[in-house]
Image (cartoon, rainbow, N blue to C red; front, top):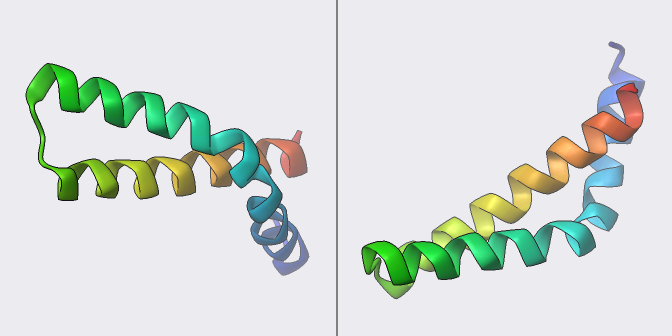
Amino acid sequence: MTSHDLLMILVMTFPMFIFAIAPALKVADYLEEKYAISETQKRIVMVGGTLSVSLILAAFLQLY
């Protein structure tokens, strides 16, 4: 993997936010209902989930 591949993954992460927001919201809502997490923890789950799912999607698109 070259630096060009890493740069392309990071660039493609931003359009993947469109596809990553809905699953992160569903997971955060589920955790809020099931485990009664606070609003701050829910936001952390949403942001972390969105970032991780979009990064994973971008990596799969670039590498496979």
